[in-house]
Image (cartoon, rainbow, N blue to C red; front, side, top):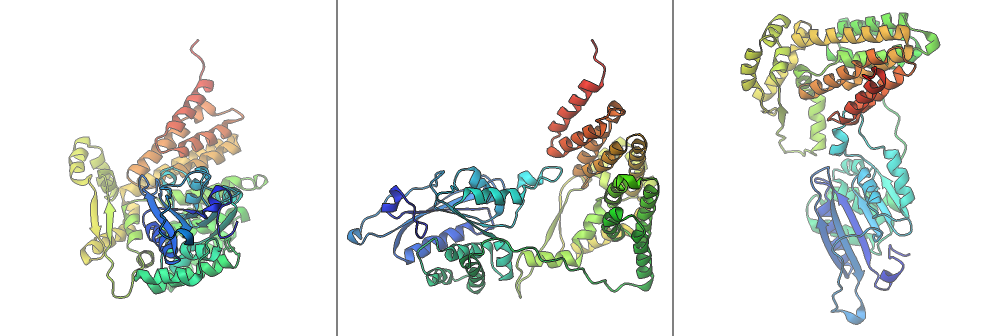
Length: 519
């Protein structure tokens, strides 16, 4: 095979078949237009079509290009080219994101005897990955391995990051990787002339093209190892807070090494959520747990507590959401992501959908609880509250509203939501420690069940419900040698889907063998 031209029946005609998989915003249409233009610029016959995906991140649009050189003996002849790709009949497949490359492999578009696969190794999570309550991300290592096995040649590196560094988009670096691969018999300047002819973002696109071209042409078509993380420098803080922080770090250093590894990040998270006194509260709980733990067990219970107690103390409420949305670091990140240029104005709209429960959580504990005890009052207020709100944060009013909400953090300890979360935390820890006393492994699994609770509003309510349902099976399992394993299975079932169907089935299984039969 030369220049991606297939062997067999198509070889006599020199047809090259290229499929491009991309979702909205990745420039798939621009890329297919460039590929078509470079073929026409080189005097080839070319045809391009597209088959739209169902929706963004549930299905990529497939852009399909077929091309072949003109026959000098039949200069006016027009070939009949296909309108869509067929499994096993693609010479070059370009994927704008790693899992799209995996989907192409599953659909049979990539074959080891024929297909060159060019893919950006960055990830854009699909809807199917995001809706899973736990970690629903597809394994990139599995995709890379299977894609390498399925393709004749596999060129992959983070073309998204490369394009961003050049001030462009991923389509430009994909185009550069295609040119640098040598799979098409066109010179580099033909590709570059195509970009120049577009007339928009030419300089940035050429920079991204050149970076990807050199990377692919060098034969180094794999990702570089990740650079070591750089520790942030300490910010300028008042001496009082700095001394308090150093005191907390000293307490972390006195914890057993396996616990210290997670207690450090947990402390940072907790202090950022409220204040150093809250961090001291976190370490107080952890030190008490460590004192009752067993070194012979490698401090497994304390290690999990270091992680999940911090997560429980840093709950999501309206105050935290407002705080995160008004931080300077977030504004800087958004400007980078949208590629804001000098002279441009960024307008940001934030979406909120609080329920009356969230509003009560913002009130002083006694007042909020009094309102929640009156269903009729809650229902009446909820008619006014329970609807989506869009807040413009590029203006003083919208930003000031969120900034004021974030400022309520200093009074958090007196608010209803904090007292509810603190009470639930203590009850959960008491259950875990009680189970640890008779079954160490079961106590550890009870701690891990905390990962079921996350988010706020409806998301938090669903997670809380699953948490309660899993732990409700403790009475049925206590005393069994496989009790810890069953709690793990129930938790994994709860994390498997948002609707709870898998958890329903797992609970029925537990009840079927744990409860005495009626016969």
